[in-house]
Length: 245
Image 1 (cartoon, rainbow, N blue to C red):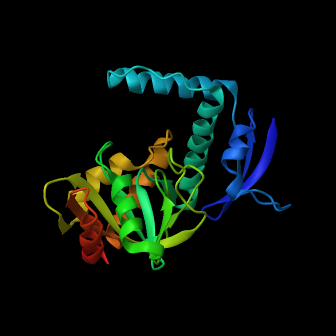
Image 2: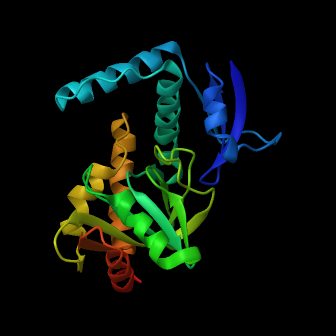
């Protein structure tokens, strides 16, 4: 088993894994330091079994064929699950969405699976050019502070590995849906709350889950939230940006 340290969302994390693939996966966040870690995570064979059972349960529930993931891949997921459980102690949580930075500010898009959030963010990058930088295309980390919310890149950035080891203040959240027209409307915390809860990582500990809900409540007060009905045409990105900026 190998142990290496990584700095993710301002926290130094010591990761001890069974397989080396985890360390290759996280290499862009590796640091060399003698300083103690903020926290440590270590995987076991039982963690890998647990992840395999979760995959089987989720795919069976959806009526889909169960894929045969390698133990190395399942361990990657187990590591991030353990990191997510600990991050809540630092007012930070994992959120399922695609985040892009534009002119030093973050825009986070979330939606039901298959809606096209990654495609929408890709349109931002294509339409707005070098001003747009991908932060994380799948599971960014969000830290709630007294002055606002910060969105961080992480190694866990989707199947296409789109992301950067950067952080920016989160300016706005967009909840996407597909439509024949491009329409953007700011919505209230109450209107957005169910989706925000659904797309956030749910800790196992009731105490940490309670803390996550408190962080979501604060975030929804500090960050503007928009309902975006969009096409998959390039102008959808421009219309969304002009409304959200």
